[in-house]
Length: 241
Image 1 (cartoon, rainbow, N blue to C red):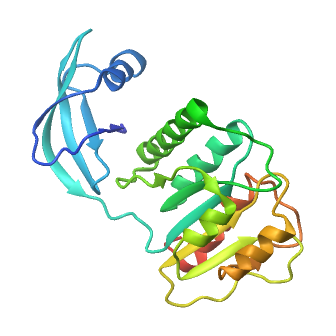
Image 2 (image 1 turned 30 degrees about the horizontal axis):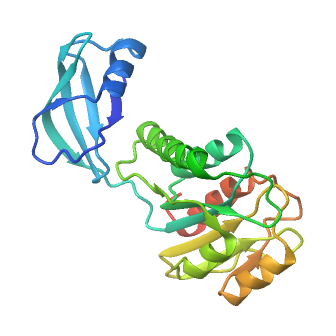
Image 3 (image 1 turned 180 degrees about the horizontal axis):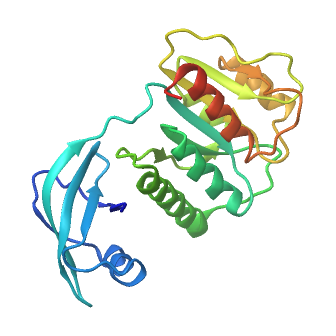
């Protein structure tokens, strides 16, 4: 039977007795119906899993006693920073979730010229928190113990100027360039456009910042399909698939 696994929002370190935050306690008790003596695994983003058991479970509190910890070695040797053009509704959630499962190291939502999603103020703050929670949930499911950062949204120009990687790739349908042959590359930045794709001005701007334009075959992929295909190919060729 699979042991339930949860993200604990503060460093665990050498602690042995932990009281679960209210929201997590409610989920464990009410949704999963866990009870005293049930085994659980906690992780705090440090790269370790902490194994323990529920020692108290009431309407007011859930307490866990930890028994041991293990260092998890399932992070990809290829560090991929995905710059994803902001897309509508649940598509962004889906991209973040699947990208984390596929081993991405960081994600930045980017605003592009042909994008049709507008976020600002409190709504943007809420979305930022929500996206990071999506990444955390994907780590819980995929047994990653290091949580990728979902960076604050920024413009395409800002991201292409600031992102640092040994290899920089921009997906652009219609290009004749296939995925380049890389050797001994540890870090890749990959830009994927929104539903409307990248403008020619954005392509030129990215090329000026060292990005190489490539296409994934002759077919046009949706904005939520392209990053998943790209990450899968990169992990298969240069990562740990």
